[in-house]
Image 1 (cartoon, rainbow, N blue to C red):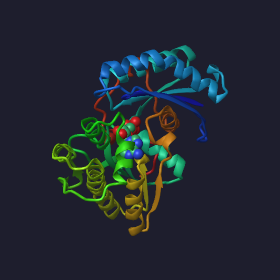
Image 2: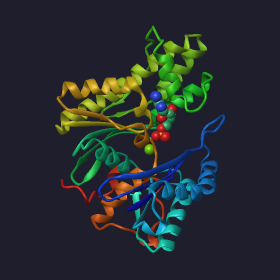
Image 3: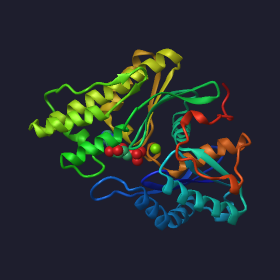
Image 4: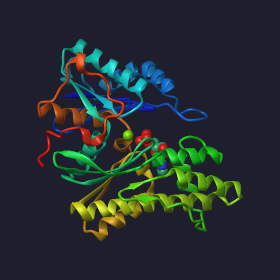
Length: 327
Ligand code: AMP
Ligand code: MG
């Protein structure tokens, strides 16, 4: 049984998972600033203040005792340094206190693995879209390769920043989705796919300009969604065509978006691939995905000693050997 801690950005989460893949509990809390973006120091303070009680709730909700936990896993990176350090400190303390091993998990890899657990997929192309990340990931040569990613801001960040400029509260993604349904006209926005990578900052600037010009908000939201999701679909489609994989997985906070889901479902259908959207409780940042990936890693022989358990804020998805999967 593994207790997993997630704390790479604005959310702190703790989840308890068994080694046959049962999620016994998954508790989290997200810092949502009234105005402005996330400040790393404020987010880390949030984790330090709420972390211990979230861990306690996760253990209670799982219906177990702290001594029943066999393994502690934590999100080692990538993420905001102060947040990662608070989370790692809680994880190390628990590992030492309970006398159980410690595993450091890559946050992006965990998003893929929990999606595979939920869907039963063996080897998907994954579209991982959230506030801080936009990546198209697929397994090749013993690593999760980032086939494509944003060259500047993440799609969720683009939506939230645009939302803030046009008077929406954080997180703006759901509001933009709702407004977009009433949109009637499509306004051209920069569509920037560069090879397998994409860029959202030009679109953000152009969308803000539409707002200043008095274009109705529903039309802006509709245009932003169609352009931003179209870019993702193009790269996902190319990744499927290249890798010949037969599964397409959509995960991350932005996976909640029904229009994006519909577009990617179409991509999967055209390539006779199965499609799965990870359910909201497992799609966002939470501890169960860290716990489950920690179990996979530990069973394959990977764990950390406390003195070498420093965090890795810039840890890339493809920098970790995936020793628990066959190539
Ligand atoms: P995460 O970073 O995984 O916690 O996800 C949070 C991000 O998901 C924020 O940027 C939200 O704006 C975004 N989000 C949540 N729901 C939706 C939605 N229905 N459509 C688009 N984006 C969404
Ligand atoms: Mg995430």
